[in-house]
Length: 351
Image (tube, rainbow, N blue to C red; front, side, top):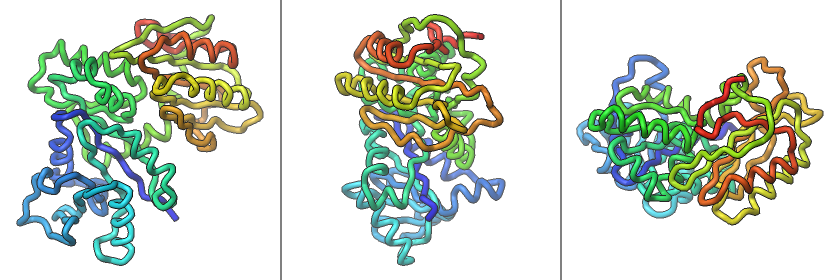
């Protein structure tokens, strides 16, 4: 059975998540692909009224589900997310609501997107029927820099994003916006970034988020790897450190697993995120690496190679409230031969 993709829409309090959703759902589709992104989409929100429904152009299907004229379903989440997703699936199965082929979940302003990832991985009913398809995080263009410095939740939402959307760009001066872009690039170098006034249509945005999950930028980083001794990269922002490493030869699987295990044993929540593409010895293709906190997803999903035969690997390690020396020492000891892909200033290093 083909699993239903779930995309999370995250962002700190007042960042503009609902405004983003409103704009995406109200946009008039001009192509079949754009219409297809609306047809069969289920949006889970805390309050139906928050998405500005026009009741003249919508139809109440049940007491918690509304069908928009665009073909998109909106569902109010009352209680546990697990129950909402389970109920929606069963209601569609029994034709109580129209069938849906994708889900958008708008989280609260202080929610951790990792909770959805964990739920989809470990809740048996959901794990068999749904799959995680990325996180779109909205960052406040006016107050985002301050929130990243002062609120752990804002940092967590940015770190776990596959797409970052900067809102309120019309209320922000150019210099402040540029500084925020740099900060976000350092916190999460793998995420695709958009400014709110240049956000693509829903179909493209969902595709971008899902593509970032499945292909974490390996080909983009490949030509930028640098050779030389392993050295510390002091890339910190709001207590977040980013270490980007590469290897030019295949790695021993057991030693890689040992290194990740050692990394996960550091004081929780030291490790925020682990992402990359690794080519193991005696393997015919690279595999994706994806971990959050102490949870590592199975190393069995092939990494899109697009003809890449370099047999090289890269890994992005994002930590919080701790020096980069600890993960650096782990990889230096267990996986020697690593190279930095990013300079201490946060810039890619040309090979």
